[in-house]
Length: 162
Image (tube, rainbow, N blue to C red; front, side, top):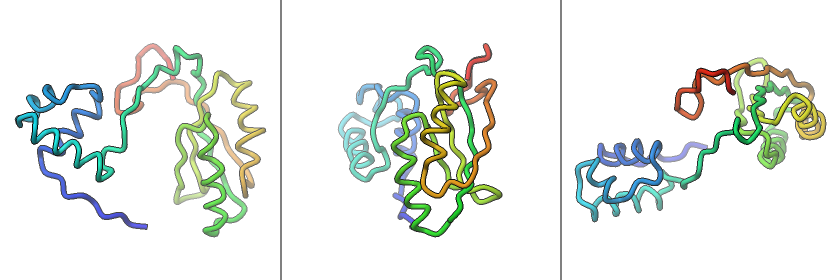
């Protein structure tokens, strides 16, 4: 399914770039930074939100401080890749909270998952009880991350955290 892209000008792109790093910035400050007055900035912001370009705002947390420092990337191979099988897998995987990302891949395997847990024991439980039981999974391969160098568009810490 190909979605139509919205025609964005330089001001729209500046708004998006600023908000992607500073979601709590005031409209007044946003307007000052992009070089427009407050009213047209608010109108552009509203249009970007209503059109779905800006899908929402959220808090970014430090998973290390929350004890979720184990990151694994999991290759998933399905036994069936027809559309109904892919849809069943997609529907089931999105409800697993430990799966931070899931991507359909063109290659030797079908999906690549980013899984974050509190350690190897927690990861093994997620793999055995949740990932391996997803519809049409034939096998998985796990790669454990040792350090996040760049994550969420921000440079990772140099201290060895994931």
